[in-house]
Length: 124
Image 1 (cartoon, rainbow, N blue to C red):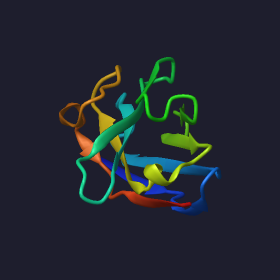
Image 2 (image 1 turned 45 degrees about the vertical axis):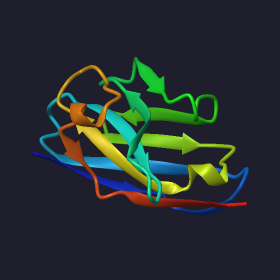
Image 3 (image 1 turned 60 degrees about the vertical axis):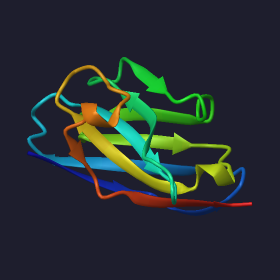
């Protein structure tokens, strides 16, 4: 079993930056790929970014490419999402997810464990 805890969300003005963290505990000796998803009010949860175990491979949604960067610190069992040039449409609850696989996934069904989410609000 793996537990994921997100942190770093908050309120920021458009054009600003935030850095989200996702700390894992539990069966962290296993090799998990990680992902970030988000869900805005009234919308479905959507893929944001993912990283394979070890950090060698990454993938981004088109809507965040060039603005967001996912990275990992395997020694700390932590994954980060650096979000720059934030827009009001980035407002959502951001969820960290872990997949019991070395390779990343882009679909919700590919992930085995989820955090509780952290709110990101971008004001115009």
